[in-house]
Image (cartoon, rainbow, N blue to C red):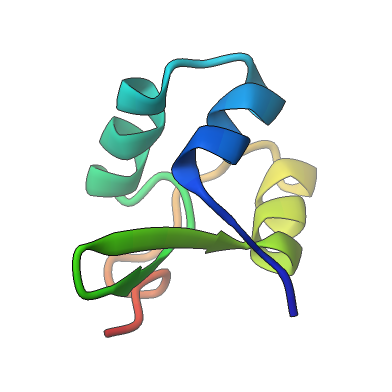
Length: 64
């Protein structure tokens, strides 16, 4: 299992890290929160891209 940082995802999507954080806050991008750290699992990200970046159900993308 591989995880991306917000900066890595921002580079992949050609966005600023702030835009990626905003997408995570709005539950648009699947993410895992470990304390204050945010990571995006590679397979979940790839599936999200394949689905056209569709919104996940609230709570679906977060693990504590």
